[in-house]
Length: 298
Ligand SMILES: NC(=O)c1ccc[n+]([C@@H]2O[C@H](COP(=O)([O-])OP(=O)(O)OC[C@H]3O[C@@H](n4cnc5c(N)ncnc54)[C@H](O)[C@@H]3O)[C@@H](O)[C@H]2O)c1
Image (cartoon, rainbow, N blue to C red; front, side, top):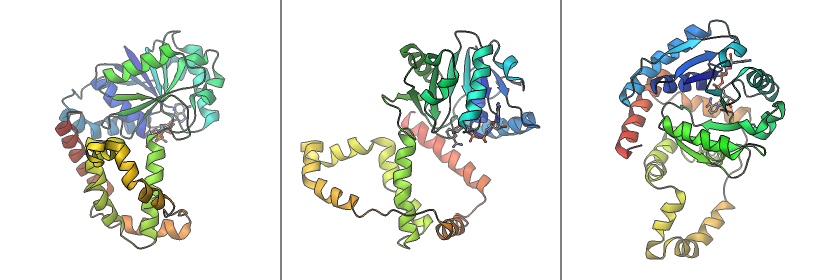
């Protein structure tokens, strides 16, 4: 099957590498000059991680800047263009006019509801959000979010498609801004910024607190199961009765920081203390991430 990757930036490259490694015939469509070199360089960087995951990293990726031609015989289209509604409308109008009538339509958008993007489509029932957690070639989650008019069939096909890529698709019952994973991330990051801005801990200490506690715990059991187990034999009902009042009190004590100039300067300065450049740190992160995924069998 042919998969058309629309937009060859951060997310497009990662999807392209993963889909090609799963044997799809991948074509990347992006009008940016020099995109082929940039995407090929990005794909080369993914190769070690894909190999570590046991996937062949010699899949076929071709390039077609003309979107109409790129989708002409697509079985699936995964759109990763800029996060702007006007551009997504333009892109999807062209895709719908030129793709086969049964091609699966997926958008990686991290925040624009499928309902809004699909207003540009004659058949809005075809479009579904397939929001990956960066980087899609590694992190299992894909949030599958139907719009008001998305058909159950499109949702089902999206789930099946992502499962075939070894992903963990989760279908949301409602469209909410930011979907689920990024809302959680925003909530936690707000408190992270508060604690660092208040000088309680440094960024490095805060990260250690997370990777030595919540990160490890949540890789195995999520927040609800963790508290269900934290309640002992009485489970979550006992936990909420016993520790719920303290938890509720703490909600009222959480910080509400701003990302003003001073805070951004402080956060940026401390980010220089992670002990390595971004490429080195990302490589070490990928190695550890893959080891964890293998250990957990995911
Ligand atoms: N970066 C993330 O962490 C992340 C995570 C999940 C989802 N997303 C979503 O994925 C999408 C892409 O994000 P990104 O971070 O890869 O952005 P990016 O800026 O890295 O890439 C966007 C690409 O789209 C290309 N483009 C511009 N106009 C185009 C057109 N008309 N047709 C085809 N391509 C076009 C650009 O040249 C660029 O290469 C966004 O909708 C974003 O919300 C991003």
